[in-house]
Amino acid sequence: MTDFAPDVIVIGAGLAGMAAAHEAVLRGRLVLLLDQEGQQSLGGQAYWSLGGLFMVDSPEQRRLGIRDSAELAWSDWLGSAQFDRDEDANPRAWAEKFVEFAGGGMRSWLHGLGMRWFPVVGWAERGGELAGGHGNSVPRFHITWGTGTGVVKPFADLMVKHAQAGSLSLGFRHRVSGLIVEGGAVKGVTGDVLEPTTAARGQSTSRRVTGSFEYRAESVIVTTGGIGGNPAMVRKHWPTDRLGRAPKTMVAGVPDYVDGRMHGIAAKAGAGLINEDRMWHYCEGLRNWDPIWPNHGIRVLPGPSSMWFDARGNRLEPPFMPGFDTLGTLRRILSVGEHSWFILTQTIIEKEFALSGSEQNADLTDGGWREVLQARLGKGATPAVEAFKAQGADFIVERDLETLVARMNDLTPAHPVDHAHIHRQIRARDLQLNNRFCKDAQITAIHGARSYKGDRLIRTAKPHAILDKAHGPLIAVRLNVITRKSLGGIHTDLQSRVLTPSGAVLEGLYAAGEVCGFGGGGYHGYNALEGTFLGGCLFSGRIAGQNA
Image (cartoon, rainbow, N blue to C red; front, side, top):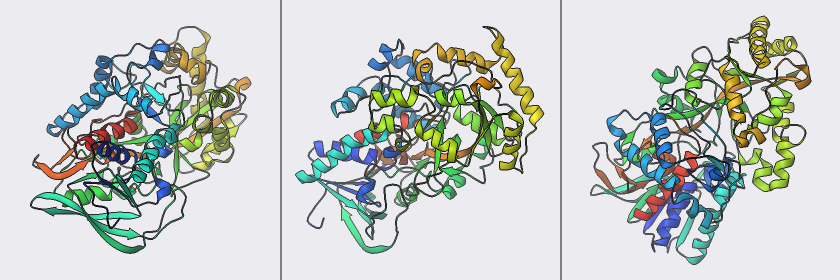
């Protein structure tokens, strides 16, 4: 790279970084793309995702009879974001532009790059309270064929193409440690060259330094992701006032290179950081029996039928039901403990359990319709779920409830639950199935889910009694808090320019992706509607590349 004189330096070769680099190249800019990991990690966190994208009024929705609109999506967004701070002006403006994009040019742009979507649209974050509150009113979660790998591949291919054409230079194992600031403007980067690595994608890599570098450019774009792989930083910014005390034990939903280093480096150079206490962590984490990165956790993507109990054995009340309100449920769980339990049947796990991640969904990642039908509608749960059921430390399978509860208590002896109490709650729920009408909100939600043909086909089991042995065996799943996304970060304007703490433009510096809260310093506000993380990386990366 000694003879390469870039116009733009992009720090971070994840999805936002690649989108930014591509757009800058289209403008005739020479781009240097740096990343502390090896070439095998091109694409960053997005590679491991389920590949879900938030899109509005799409052909996939219309074919399923879903009536969506930008107005409805924006109403849902505002009800979830609950913007209430002076510094939310730019995040709110970013959110409005993103919703327009999600209902406008996003699909055609990505379709033109080769992406295609699974025809059944998922319904994530359903809310469960009033129309003006948190949640998606309709299904909007579009899973990309190929999952995360299918989202990453078009952009990774473009990086190779641009590099071969001489308009892009790739600098792997280059860890930025400082920004060059001269005359109040960012003029380049400094850092360390790390020793080469053969570690597989996602695994921890050496931090041994073999050299140093300094590169200058007219513009620098920071796209280095969030803080989810750095538990100390997660705890530092944990919103105790809103969620309760941070759990002592959490599993990691992202690799350890998601370390948040560039937040501090950018701040030292003059960048303003906002909304750092807004974050998105899930309640349904499993300890991976076959881990890739340290403390590797996998999230359960549950359908609506599993019964959810807190650490004391009390059933969670509405709206804290599977798939409805992530942060509300997290707050409820942490009010009495650190873990929670699903109790369900084999029938439910076969129809409703999915696991987040490209590597956990071979049918959607590497297969086609035949593989999906075999995995989702055939006998048993998907192979990945059955593997967790057999080998995962958090799964218990038994024929009767008394033995199941005894083994739950063996797994968490410091927090025992009472068999009689659990039995009464399950029996009360089961009695609600004797009529077409009932007073149990979760049973009502199940009936509502099955009115949507997508849920009825592959995501929601036919209502049945948990204690009906014909649907057994019984299954208990211990659920851990799993770290995932930062919803705040570097403050940016609508051109992706980084702003100082006083709100002035920090000349020469731009940011995109999770490092800036997916746009503006936190375009989600307090809550995410799902599919908006990958979409936010693409959207903000695109804008940064068009302006840097």
